[in-house]
Amino acid sequence: MTMLLSHSVGAGPAAAPRSNEVVHRRCTAVAHATRQKSGASTSKTSDVDVDGRGPTMQSSTRGRTKAGDITKRETKPHKARPPKESAPQGDDAGEAGEGLEGLDELLADEGAVRQLRTSLLASLSAQHEQAMRSEQMTPTTPDAEASGSPPALPAGAATITADRRTTTPKHNTDKSATINGDGAAAGVPLVVLKKDKARLFVSGNPMVYGGAVDCVIARPPPGIGEPVMVTDASRRPVGWGVYNPHSMFRVRLFQMQSEVEADPRVALNVPALVQLRVRQAVELRRALGLPSADTNVYRLINSEGDRLSGLVADVLGDTVVVQAGAGWVQRYRQDVESAIRAATGLTRVVWRPLWRILQEEGLQPPDEAAEADTGTETEMLEVREAGLRLLASPKGQKTGFYADQRDSRGFLAGLVRAQAAAGLPVSVLDLCCYSGGFGLAAAAAGATRVLGVDSSEPAVKLATANAELNGLSATASFVRADISDFMKAAVAQGQQYDVVVLDPPKLAPDRSALARARIKYLRLNTLAMRLVRPGGLLMTCSCSGAMTQSNEFVGMVVEAAQQVGRQPTLLREAGAAADHVLNPAYPEGEYLTNVTMRLL
Image (cartoon, rainbow, N blue to C red; front, side, top):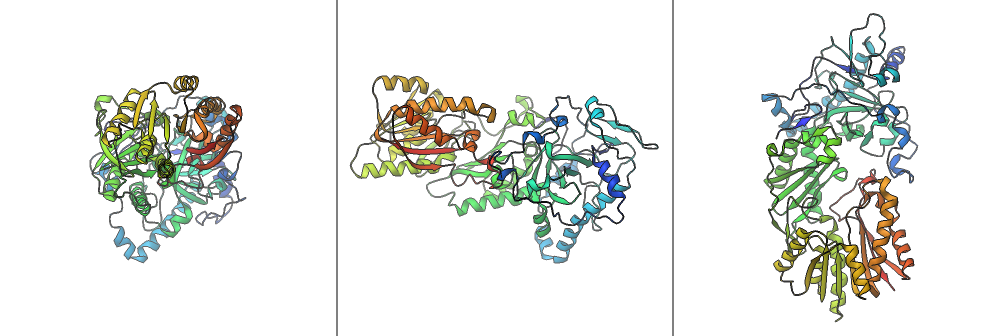
């Protein structure tokens, strides 16, 4: 696949280095100060200041870095001058896929494991000492950086080439990025955090925002997806991850230093780590009973939850649909696909780059004619969920199927089944029905009448086809309409249902839109409640992460009930299905809220 990158990158862990090298910002000041202390060492394990709270533990920020943490320099608009790197060619390009080759042999040799661990720790010390010896490292002043001019140089310093962010001594051409037997690792880039920022990541938060970074020491400058070591302000290791000079997420951490010390096999090796994490994700889904005889559509990899930030993959029968939502994922596409095939035994992978996000990560979409993709717009796959046969498109909404609501569809089916078993008729209104998941689950459980509404004609056709596929056309029907207009007309006609499901699209893409989104949610829910018969049920949802993380959704639903004079009883509040695993240190991964209430 042809890629146009702001920094040209290869398929492997590191692009071919250029002659220029980088060192920057205030690191030099730290280096000169540290050099005055003879015998200083930074190779020991970090004992960062921990106050018991990271950003993820503070209710006011819900895990985000505060806005004030982002420096003016980081947020100031500028036209970056990307480094000119060339992608590895020939044999070099293939080295990225070697992954865990020889891993078993390495494990069998305990001495080799100890040596590798020692080498990794010693590498930081070696790199630090080398930085201390360098007389070319000069702090970049804010004025110089803002103007794009090179900083002032000490007498006798080498000529510096500046690119707004970094200064590069031309004569230093050390290109090594390997950890060899004597512990040297001069080519591994260092990302040094600001003072006291390391504590934010002790709990396992994987996202290092640009505002937390003090400086980067690297030769050449790290590009998109390049492995880097992250240290605290004293150069004590915090962990390692992948770098992106363009992203607000400057580093996505893959391993904390304690993990590296315990098991160094995949340290600084992105293909090997991907292979390991994908295998762990598959094993976890099997523990959850997925796939099973009656369900073969599910979330396989859930970004930060599976510790592969930016990577999402869903299994649709015998096909895996991958969403690439980070620059490193796109760079290591071949490694990701290979790892998925090896771990699942499924050979077909449909790759779906999220270009709106990837452009923010410094990538540009290739010409559509050059973009190879194994999916097609009209292709339909048949999958199974709880025994229902359903059609899904690998090129449809999300990955083609909303597996995140599987548990909630099962909950609704259980409620309907209980009513039907008691001989009670159950009518269901499924608003924003898409492929008919909720309505068809209710129909299969014994609902006497199901009506689905969606504003998308393709969605209505898909839901209708799914009803026919399961022999439920006599019970379930679907119409195209704007849901607000539909509900207003239905209220005017005095229509009421035993169960109303309201599952609108994302209304708050970020926190800045939350206030406006809350008004929309309130209006939709007041209309929906007017369509619920006394004693009936409302299942209402929000897939807006900003709303879910604000903990305002239930309160908004209660307010809607008060506005229409209904008395709500909360039966259930849930998130995404169990296969959408979460990293507890990163609550931003929570996005879905599903609330079921009885309305008197």
